[in-house]
Picture (cartoon, one colour):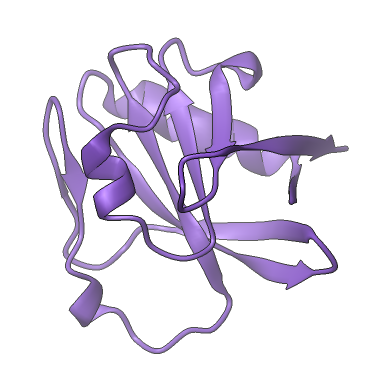
Length: 124
């Protein structure tokens, strides 16, 4: 599976992570899935999200029904772009992006629910 995202949209998410550092940030990813590709078109802050120095969470039961949500993105202030066991146990959707410090394009990784890395295709 491949992840496609507009470079400007990714930069906006990275900018938010830089702004909130050293706290984590969590985002919901909206988009479309078809033929082995997930196109991420937008992101939003989940309602009632909370974050700290080593966590970011949201109550999934508070989300409205929205079939355009394809996954989540969250930051790792530690600099590791690998998913933790907690990340995998709280996986939501079809894809998880990790925005690792120092929050540049090359420090972003995508994973499926099994923790397997996915290819990111930047558009624009």
